[in-house]
Image: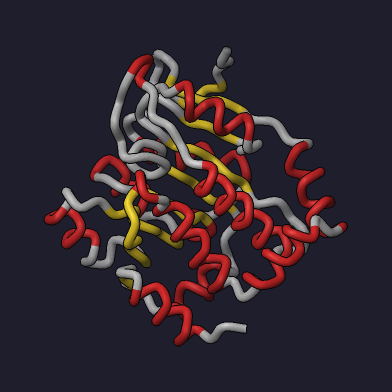
Length: 239
């Protein structure tokens, strides 16, 4: 079992920045019931292409799945809520949400606080029970409310990174959104959740515990939400 000191050293040696101590982050993880992700700049480098495409990596996908499994193991086999929260309308984000059985995808919501309010009300959570993975200015309003925040770095955001260091996040990744920053963040949170070895071994052995988790995960469905003409968050059918 890796100590908190060793975990800190491992990630700092790679260039990660702890704004909260590993012990504080570990305490926060124990209370987390939902993992919420921005999309552009988090799962990718934020570039746009045909049909506004912005892709994702299977390496990040595995990290998120293992983080959910880690939470399931420590939270009395209760599946955590997972959501994408984006101001854009992105087909790939929608497909990822469906494939990974995220419970919610919020899209074209420029005031992201409205999406967070809806998520909290819908599931009866408090903001301090949410972990948020973000990368830019539009995310700051949500980040200042959530209990655990990870800033996905980008070399170009020199001043913004300094701004974030002023108590705006718990950890800043070494890797950017296009370089598996999400995987780095997930590995850290699993390690600080104190069950990294268990999670990995149960997954590669595909043991009964992982099969039970996967069956529950796959039994869920994804809801899509956006703003109505009245400015309210409403469920929306996505093809």
